[in-house]
Image (cartoon, rainbow, N blue to C red; front, side):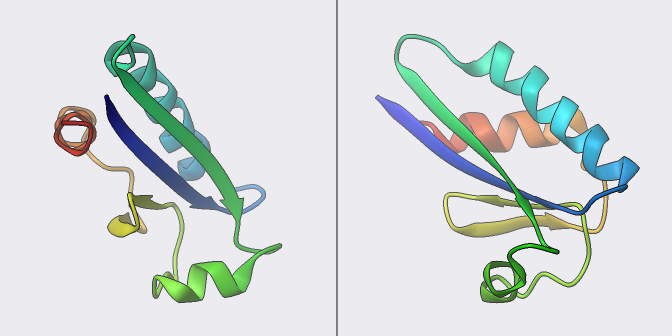
Length: 90
């Protein structure tokens, strides 16, 4: 079974963070299945700054996939992010 743990680092009032959350939800709907398990956790850096520091995150939105920083400070390309998620679940 393929698995991915995705952490979305965001902050209150961040419109790009909301856009990335919607993007991740759409990817989750397309990629998830009986043999793929994807968990998404939204981390507010205002409430958990130390966790953001672990990855060297200084801007939002930031995405960490399976413990590795994938993107920071931007809304990633939908197709490229989906391909990364698919790779991580293989």
